[in-house]
Image (tube, rainbow, N blue to C red; front, side, top):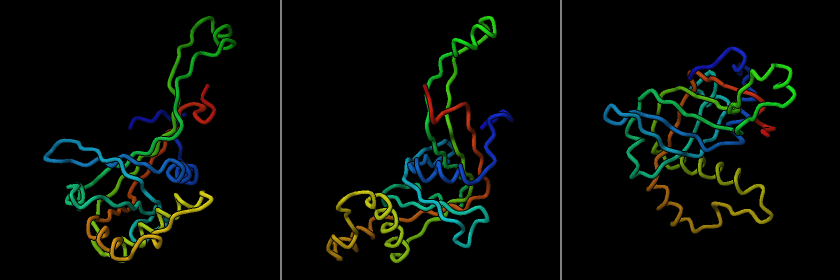
Length: 181
């Protein structure tokens, strides 16, 4: 991703916050030499023992072939607030009309190597964390424990975990995206 110096986000905390707030990431892999994208809700973990900069975790249906690309170098893109920005009328006058509209946005790109995980205990813990995080804001949150154990055990056999140790992370904060006009 091209990042002009004035748009580079080097602070890790705002990037982690964007990934947490906008957790649906686009996982980009190569499938028979062609780019392929899967949209998955990811969770960020501080380290997990694999990546100095942390790890991303998700799961996919076993039928989804993306998990078979284990070991592949991948990209996960997270997009935060975005929107069209019309030229500011005052700036237009001050700049003698030398202004143009633009698109403001915040994005984070995470690079790392894909690892597939089939361990049922890992999968159950990951599904619980993801569910608890999403359901925690509800007045009556649903829990994995609300479903019959044999049902959950069957579902766990139908998914595969994905973990990506973060090797490189880059952020681009173009304009004032959170307050897009």
